[in-house]
Figure 1 (tube, rainbow, N blue to C red):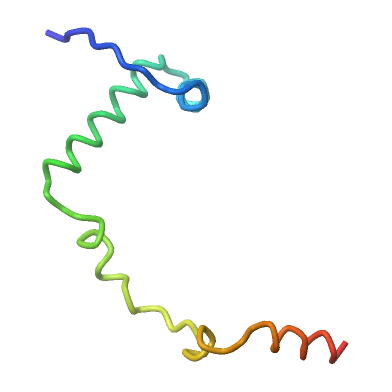
Figure 2: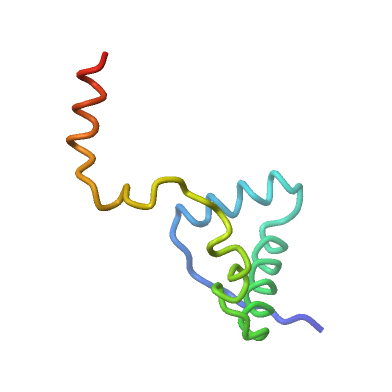
Length: 83
């Protein structure tokens, strides 16, 4: 048997939930119930975000590894000067 529960949410969150319900063509309560079910399943599984994506970390070659250590302002000025 299901029991009733009430909760408070910001007007912005309420509008978002209503948009999702409208898109899915279902009641708002179904969207909220699905969200709570997903949250509980994720929390009870004990799987962290890191665990769920660790096989993806480091598999993409991002190009120049020194780009974060250079002064990008100087590089942008040099690019503009070439125009």
